Length: 239
Image (cartoon, rainbow, N blue to C red):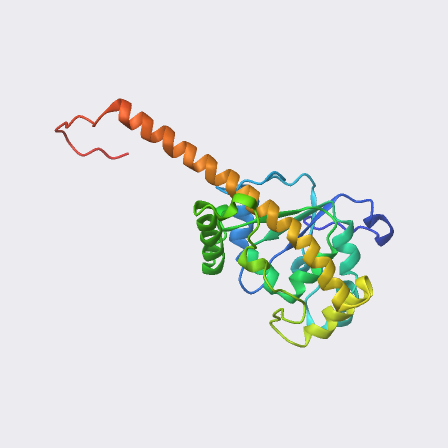
């Protein structure tokens, strides 16, 4: 199909492409497409538009048919390099920090993560709850020193992560050990990386909440200046 391009493995490291991390069972593709098209209310300093033409998406770029299982696993075991060499990294939802495959991808990626949330169009109840909890923390002023830890980032580790099929756990453990030597080293590295992301997510939320409050203040001032709208009798109007 014209939608796919074959890149020689020797050229992949110098190819400009993006990778995605998303929970397979929870995230609808319509949400991912909507989030990529528009950041909605949660704008990030990283920007919202893809700057590359190529995207590696596991479910599409790896043959999922049973008879190609050996070839699929060979590609999956190369995930460390596929994610590490990508020039852009797009992350869909905070719930990825509870998923084993997603943690492996997040740890492997070298590009700064662009995180999409319910404010960008993700519609799962979990993401809506996470986003509202974070905004409530900001409204309550807990963000003053950016010292609190957002719930999805708390107490996570590979061993506590979830898998749709627990048969995948040893596969992912092998990939992690290949990259970091041990699961303990991986968890320590991921904790440091997530701590930085935690601060950036909170800072972005603070910035967006301040912008939202400023817009509300401008609206309030405009209403006060305009006064109450006049009462006018007339017909209904269809717009």
